Image 1 (cartoon, rainbow, N blue to C red):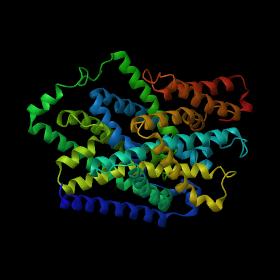
Image 2 (tube, rainbow, N blue to C red; image 1 turned 30 degrees about the vertical axis):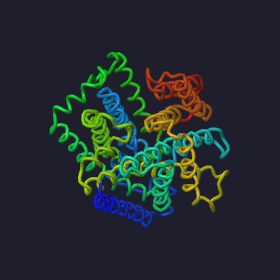
Image 3 (cartoon, one colour; image 1 turned 45 degrees about the vertical axis):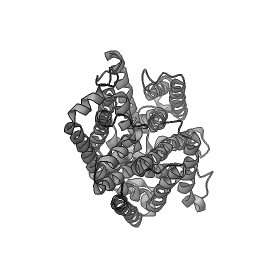
Image 4 (cartoon, rainbow, N blue to C red; image 1 turned 120 degrees about the vertical axis):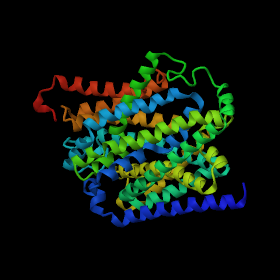
Length: 473
């Protein structure tokens, strides 16, 4: 590729990056200390809730992991977004408006504050410590997935290699995460959601065009795939496919309840009605980008059958086939898809860490986001390529869903509970999901389904024989 090609592509990418920092700066100007401390005062409308939550939910997994799964395993992995869609339908029917209403009443900024509202707990209570640590550890793993995705992005788009590329990508994200605060995060997510929709359309249209322009080569390449590649059941059975879908139905519900970087968007909605009205904005955005990128990976296998790392498939394809101006736009889109989630994760981890007031003084709270970013960069480097974006992302969100989702559901649905039952719910949900994962049983059904089910059962059994007057609801 010529120097002119790189200049044009990098110019478009740079302009979008400048717009990203501008959105973060605008968010900081619009922020107030009162709104940061009581997130319900952010008063976001349905479009900002839906697009911001969707962009945060999508993560680098969609532009790397989803493409890689479609490329490597075929149409079977379209069942993952389908299961997520069914779970989202249930979640949006029951929870976002209740989370907004309950959060406003509790003046909650974090999931820990929502879970512990009205419970007689001190700052050293295990319920606070365990919930905060689950948030920080799992979000740390999820953030590591974004750094790995960012490294693959730079390698696939510009051919830049080396461990320093992970640090370079992370630097830009940490910089505007530290700049923009919560509202800056929302503004950036909304802006990047729009570029993601445009980038998805261009990339999918391009791979369809290339496949159709040489159907003989496309068919020849597809003949080399495995027998189950184009079978929606893969190499399994209908029963195993149903188990796979049901596991991700539960993971989707748990994700909506147990991911603070997403839940804060529902807490910040203008009203319960506005939170509920974001339903189809969120679902359309997530499904369109996720399912389309998985299908893109399937088609890419017939167009470019020998990509060494399938998770780099999107950047490799657009760099090889599109004009530099479109490459710059899609590269900016890919950056945004990864960075929007990493940004929100750092903000959410910072909020959770700030609430551990016994560990951090207010005067050093401004250093928390950079410190957390640096820690996750070092941890991602230590992995040295031994984990894919898919492995890091799915494991982190599933374990967090198993630990936190049952407790959040109990609170917002106003089911009976006590301090002890809620503490046990967190512990049982998280540890059983972890054991299920370590035992290698996730291929049967996702670990979050097991953790959420046993967590809810734990609370029910512990409260069953306790008089109503001794429980909260």
